[in-house]
Length: 398
Image 1: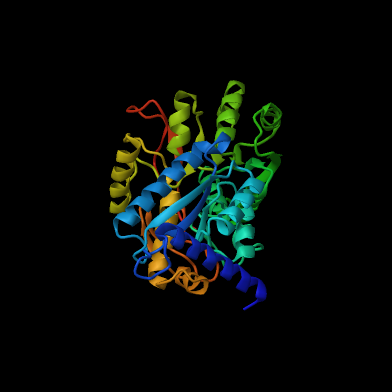
Image 2: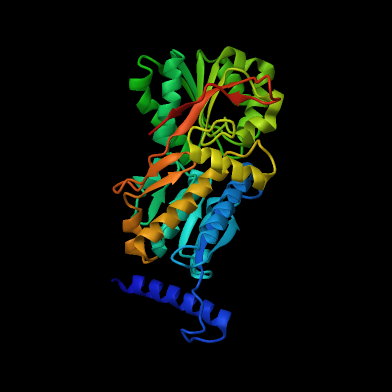
């Protein structure tokens, strides 16, 4: 063991001992209760990322409450130390390091954007703490930037690119315009689409390729370029408020009558469709991790009932399931390992299968990726609701 790692382990042990002593006023085994297991959580709960980060945090809290109701992990209560990542990689990295060095967390979870995920993962690598990426999709996490402490329970950009390419092929799209974010997620999703087009939409070609900065609110220049381009479909990954702004600005120009719009970024999630209501455009195909009106397995029905009670509505958010799966994966791995020691926890995560509200998920022992796909389909008007729903719903796996 290196001197650096010995120092890190010593620091974490001291933090645990100090926490125990502060709680009991004594260091004797008879008087010291089992110290809690600490999860460091990083999601954007303010700003533009809050539309997804806030409901995701609810899913995390729901899972922790259920784990504790079952007796905790290894007989120990689970507590969360949450930080607002603000959708900024530097903030996420700083908070992750503080959670490890000051709070002594046993595991890191979260991140929303791929840039956040890469920043958190680098801290996890340096501090040798397991990081479960519950949302970030960039393939760099588990390829160029791979290390033994990083695991992903979300889909990745190759899986999402496959879904987009398959729909483009089903729509017989021949000329494709593309608009993506100018950061890791957008670049990797574009590469995933291009790779999948060869098999999913043979003969289709990308004629326009646009990139926009994360945080862009005015898309007038890009919409003008798309309207002037010779394309019959647009492939995209604009998500959250970016898609809302893009759609509202593009509708008056007839963009969504001119082209079919196929996008990742979970624009099929109820968080977006429910918010936009009648302003959601025509000719849009989107994706989502979970849909309150689509229960493909019994676990989904039970999960939705519990979430509906928590949120006070039948029309539940689709993002809580991501954090919920992350917590349940960690709990299952720790139980299997019988320990939180790094080597044993990592070994337990590798090859682990967990039953989730959207079906079983298995983490590949080599790539540290769960076999996570998504639900895809056209966003159509519903006679029963004032918002769009996905119908028909098709699951596209990795």
